[in-house]
Image 1 (cartoon, rainbow, N blue to C red):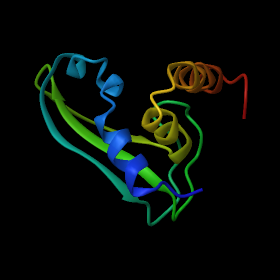
Image 2 (image 1 turned 180 degrees about the horizontal axis):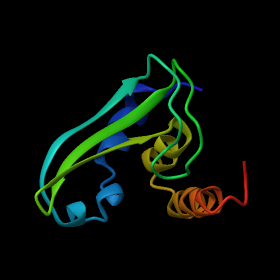
Image 3 (image 1 turned 30 degrees about the vertical axis):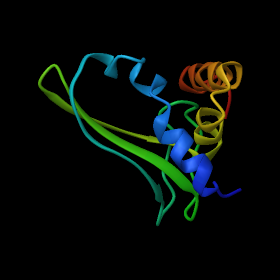
Image 4 (image 1 turned 90 degrees about the horizontal axis):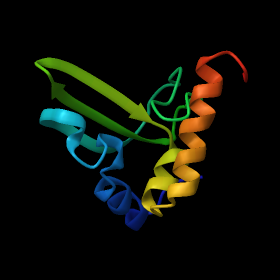
Length: 104
């Protein structure tokens, strides 16, 4: 699945990743969609692995004086692009299960 140009723009407009208020971010350094060149271990939202060649949302912020970065998978980007709050919540719930070792 590859994101369309419209989905990419809609995903970047979705600010829920920063809790609607930039999660207390002092500054958003970078927030863009990239095509990953290599596999990545886990999505910031659903904690699933990401394959090379897929779209990822890569963000970097300064929060409480600390530099933080995140990478979001194509499936979660698609949910953000459609502002599908139920699906986004499902992605976060899946991530909690994966982090706690309940799912592979």
